[in-house]
Image 1 (cartoon, rainbow, N blue to C red):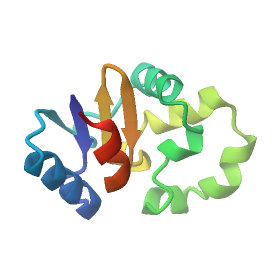
Image 2 (cartoon, rainbow, N blue to C red):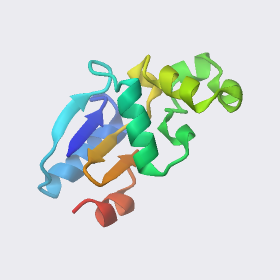
Image 3 (spheres, rainbow, N blue to C red):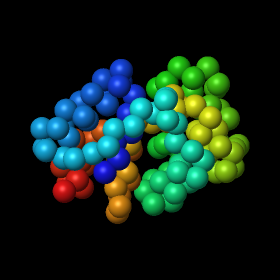
Length: 116
């Protein structure tokens, strides 16, 4: 299982604590030092079944500075994925990538149900 996080993010810290307390093995990846590529994001998006907007860190400063709330609706999926691949701070976190699932963000009830 791959755990993609920004270590200073309090939600990521809670998620990591949850994984550790449930004795889950994972590989840690810093989202800024090793930003997901276009190919990875495209694969995760398709596999997740989530709307692409769920992959954006809508509460982040960069999202707000770029006024993406207004711009995303007019952008193609490809343009959005390429944009996400430019800066890890645009990507919602944490992300769990496992063989059969992708989880974006930390919702404890969802993790309890889906992470085995």
